[in-house]
Image (tube, rainbow, N blue to C red):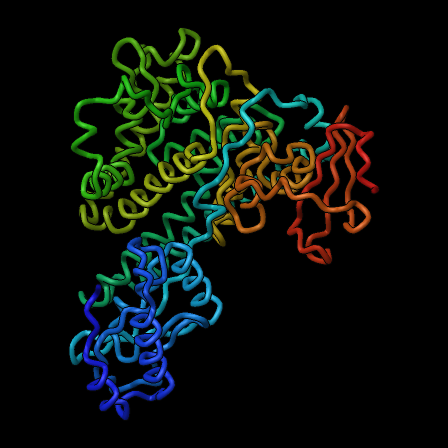
Length: 516
């Protein structure tokens, strides 16, 4: 038999408890348990802890102690005994707390603290399901037919307008820094310079993206113009234009391949180094992330760190390295000459105005650009739902679909939508960036659950919510696309009564009775 505390002393101190009925229920519970001849259950998930009585302790704020409905409250007991014992009861209590948005006051001796129940993370985005890794039931031609033809047209005037806009913002930020941040005293300048570095780095990342468009021949219809603009812009950011152009082209040709992809390829367990066990902890991961975001891009260009394994010394500055073919070596010399010209210009500026001037106005934003390049590339090709293929299963279309769109908020426009339209970019890399959003919306009905998105609107597509079924007669269909054996419907999710949030209905068999 379990010991029963002194109930009479608890009854004498009943005035210290706000709810007298709770004390009465304590006594009734004791009578019910003591008079019963049955033994109390031994398992912790049964109801005996709810009837085990504890001494009443003085509660200075009794009205502020909340409990879920139907849960036995031990008056004045600590929070440890207020918790239900069974997992089902804990889940019921958690759901009640989230629904009521209540605050729980816990006692810690004589000190009280306000503890808010933490909100539960979105299980859909935390545990996404893998995208289909089987062969897609559509072809690249079917996807291209769904895109309006004008999305593939490149305008020289419009492309240059983005260049002039970004450079104007960059020079305006330089003017603000030289006239308003430079004269500040040290306590204020220490706060103002990092803000300038971050904002200027974001703008220069947009300039880098335009040069990236030139490398894909998406800037204009003239290859010589694309190479000229790309060489100037990339050299200004210390990037060898042609070297990166050819290695990045191989990345697009082998995306998702474990053997031939260029960057951020997950290693097999047998290929993991001995040092990984020392870095597989929070301090080690923090150190790795810091090195990647600060020195990752220069190390990749100089030593091919985190890149594809080549026989011999692989370097983007080495014309005779294994990365490039014989017909590409002359242009590698031209890329090196452009980078050396910019380095010499920075040297002359350091001699004239000092090294600190170059670091403050150029070095800080360049570090932000390098960090964003690594971050964007890593997040676009790394996700728990994305598969990678070996040579026996890989093909170009499945590899191109093994990418993910990321939502950076307002930075999507600053980065010219290279972040949130990356799937469409891998499918059609020669498409200009100012048509990528329209193309992404056009290919969604065709790709269906194959496309991966981590934004608010399409996070359900990689979480299993796409399997929900709504009657076609109840949906407000705004678009219907027929491609072979696939009929896709797009719903107006903003005005849909079903709250389907833009669910795309894929009918694999046209004879499926969706109307019923």
